[in-house]
Structures are given as C-alpha cells and as structure tokens.
Length: 168
Image (cartoon, rainbow, N blue to C red; front, side, top):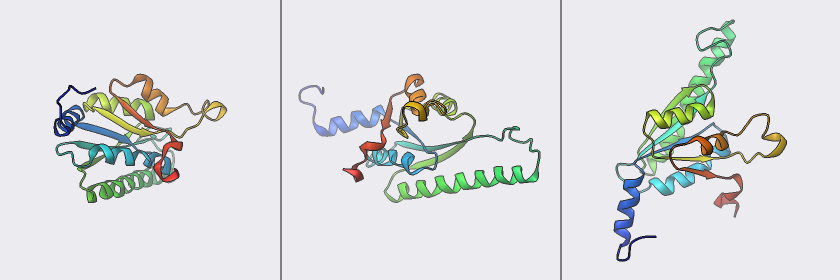
C-alpha cells in the first residue's frame, strides 16, 4: 500500500494532507453521535484539519418566514435554538480533546443539503452514522446515508449502528 521505505511519520503526513476538511452531519440522535468516535480517530493530533459539525433542520411547511400562527413561529425558533445548543455542546466536547471544530445549521432536505454543503465548502471527507434501517422501515423515509453514499463526490465513512466499540 505504501511505497517501501516510507516510515510512519511520512504516512501520517500524507494522511493529514489527504483530508483537510471533514464534515460530520448530526441529527441530534445518539446513533448519529456514534460517528464522533471515528471522527476523533481521524482528527486527533492533526493540526490544520478543519472539522465541521452540520445539522440540517427542516424548514416550516409554510416556508421559513411564512407561519400561519405564532405557535408555529415559536416552534421554529425553539428548534433553531435547540439545534445550536446541541451542536455547541458536541463541539465543546471535541474542543476539550484538542480538536478544532466549527458548527453549521442549514435548512432543507437532509441529503440534498449535506451534499450541497460538501460541494460549496470543498469538504474532503464525510464521516456519518446510519440508523441501520432496512426493508419496510427504510422505504417510507428513505435513507440519508444511502443517498449521500450514492451521490457524494468525496469519500464517505459510514458507521453502521452495530459497529460501535462500546457494544463489543
């Protein structure tokens, strides 16, 4: 795999150069957070690596600014605040481990917005979990991970729900 005579220091340098910007989409679920273990393995000790935690929120069915009731607007605002608070907590835990991280919230259809963000921001790698649904439970909601895997122009590391080290 590596040219003969390449030492571990050179390998780490080459790996670090390969991935400069890594995106991890989080939906607030415990399952989505399992990707963080793999993100940490990639990011720890890598200076200059940019880590982005992305949350995709669904806009109001009436559009972002067209609400039929004050209650709908309050729910929308609360969802925004909750998402930012959640991402800030996760980011803080990564920062405590020495990982430089930023957070972003976008609005729209999840897979589309993740792929759009990757293209517009020149992301090099996506690290994400899958909920592991199959068959009838997957069909009605589709699969974000499947769509990302099929349409991404960058490498995607998919962490299935049964592969977590804490369960081994």
